[in-house]
Image 1 (cartoon, rainbow, N blue to C red):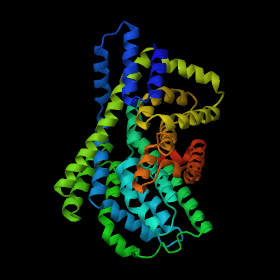
Image 2 (tube, helix red, strand yellow):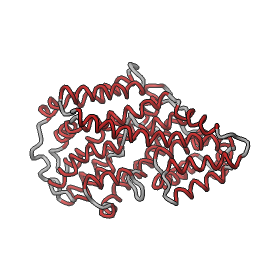
Image 3 (cartoon, rainbow, N blue to C red):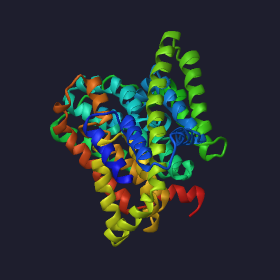
Image 4 (cartoon, rainbow, N blue to C red):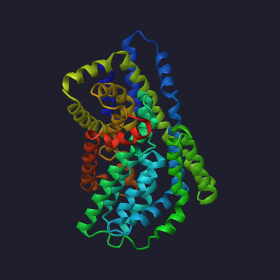
Length: 426
């Protein structure tokens, strides 16, 4: 049964059937082939997959990110980031990374980060003389931080799929997020100095104090969300609702950017994005149940145990496999299907669950920026009005930087576990 399901799912992928539908059809074939289950199992497992409290955070974080874009919060975050690093040569490009990092601390979505920040900074970088493909490639790569720095929707999905603590996963993402942010800023600074770009990036930027006064309410948002989570005031799920309310109040009553028409459009976008993710989770829940029933996780663990002799060989094999998988399969589906299979094996090799979750999320985040199905890539191309083929050459160095960071994150677990052990204990 499991072989039929996997082969049929891959065949549907090859025929360009949508990911969620492919998983659902493969699950239906598995039920039909088994012959001992009724079709009621599908409905039961769909309900079981969605009936999980942490999933409530997904639509709220998606809505919060869209409200930040519509309410002018992202614009003020950009102004503040420019005031901090915009005076450097290449400072505007560095501002892109810094803004994505701040925006990621609330939004939890890389696509939302791409549109919200890219719509402001890609035209600004082009105006300051940066090549348009470079600007779009930078935005594509920096937006990855939206799913690495907490709160992160893929981390919530990993936690739900594996019964791991959402809070531990969130705090484990802080160190890797800072590492990738620093590496990207270092690269763009060196690139600007080498090619002579960004010599006038400081023109027109606000001084630090005026920029802070203009944007302090926007900057307070991630402080409230993350401070509330780790201060024990509210759970990550409750934090998502707080983020929505804060973005609504600031966007409507303080910045006065959100109107009834824009709110309606924002709600519509958020509902569509949520429905797509939930449809994937529902179908992947059935798929995972059938694979578990067929004993696939145990068999996979035994096979990988024989294939890899130690933890380090296992991790390099998993990284290579996830990198390829992330290029072709949507991140949510990859996490919900693969995480329950791979985590038990990783734990057999002594890998901490939170550390492995971060490795998996960072790896699959790379799939968001690589062709043929990189969602960040498509989003950045739409904002920059460029065809994908124009970005490939300028995108490769950014991918190389993130891959190098991934290797460090993989083999230096303290980067992920330092803050986790500081808060939760070893």
